[in-house]
Figure 1 (cartoon, helix red, strand yellow):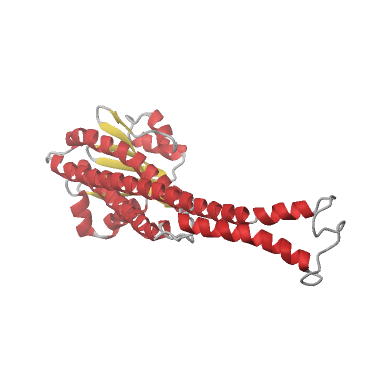
Figure 2: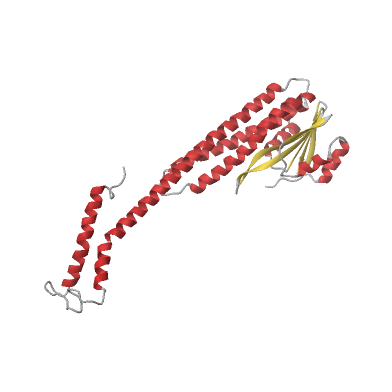
Length: 320
């Protein structure tokens, strides 16, 4: 269900977290009245879905754009943009309502005083760490689903009754999308570690190092998944080619065995004198169908001889 437009704030110990879902440009302009140092170009970037991840640094705040994956029925995963304005005593998150973990984390801060103190009780930098860490953990859950799909498709690849080409192509697209997101995310988190320290008295490097480790784990898992899918793709191609070759071999053998009958039938279809033909009169030594029996025999004997020869060559044996 599509998320409704929402703008809410929660405050704890002087730190305010404002979450904006599907804002209009006017909503961001109104926000800019409370924070005159905000750049209007950043408002446009927040509403755009095609911005690359980046960090813009200002004297009293930092503007960050990050991308995270969200499930999509048709494309597997799509990019969801998260824009962040972070200052010493505030944090503003702007998104299109597709990042459910942020909504859940924000609702927890609104409803639970104890957890709000834990999440927002230190600094805006620590709060940003909790947001990113929550989104990265959710990415791990999505990645586990992809890994599970890879394990499920293994049996399909080796089942000759089905073709796994489409499923493998979809998995490759999902993995490629996740890899593009993780590549930018890894760089952004590393750069962001230096900037958030400006707004926190506590050393946050250990917290962001933990997030970096999680991102690295996602990246490594994606590399393994990519290699596995590539192996399955090559295996599926080889097995499909082998299956096609088997079919062509059977059809070729059937066609080859039918050549004697085709040649004999072609001769007897000519308008020339042939023993047993209509012009010379049919043979009747074995009855009215003597000519037919003779034609059938001289067609089957060469075919039988070729069949025996093919069998001795091993062309008709089933592979073990």
